[in-house]
Length: 80
Image (tube, rainbow, N blue to C red; front, side):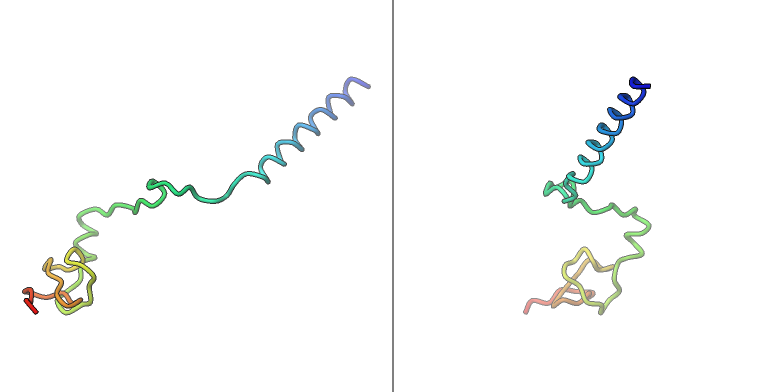
């Protein structure tokens, strides 16, 4: 009986220590480049996500014409 009580006490202490380790584990994300990687799109979805002529854009890769001028998708680039 005493041996069984000792085993139960040891298991209880071990479980308590493991639970304490889980509570103290860091939940913050690492600052590595792997954590910042964006999911890759297939060519099919990339083609569907391109913006039409006249839509707002930040760079040429967002436009269906691959030309972004004055923050708008266009057919040609402007020199001014």
